[in-house]
Image 1 (cartoon, rainbow, N blue to C red):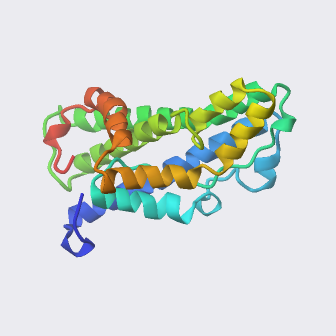
Image 2: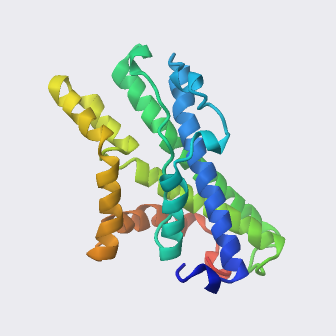
Length: 238
């Protein structure tokens, strides 16, 4: 979706609002699940910091949670976002490496589950009235649209976060396999890698016209959507 806000139709603005609400809700759920897993493993850090809550104001990062997804929506790129990481202290875990892996993958697993819920909602909407095309602005269309965005955005978040590179959740598997000085060096890099990573994510596609992340997400999340989206070409704007 490109162009200035003034040139957008009412339907396009509504679609962007649906996407933004789904993105914010999904990344909040992602972070809460990180904290809940840590709490279940005996770490009260997230709870004491007030992060085991559905209140988005406790989790959102101004750039990563709002500005970035809006920029991606306007440019027509795959929409992803991030929130403030939930704090945890692995010293509370009986098995530190196992605990860190469980905490790290609780977030992506939550997104995978939400993606499956979105797929179910799409099929329910498609099945109402015996399938076939829906009319823009009718109830079945918007139910399908919400399910579509819930599935697409959460599958994107899942595959994005399992990439084994800092600072994403998938990089934790690397840290769990390292020992001693190598592990300490890895975590120093991980804690300062977000800025460099985001520069690469934003600069490569729009300056050098090379978008490896987009290609990866279209192959993974897009591939799943091609199987779980019933007759999505019938739906206006999807």
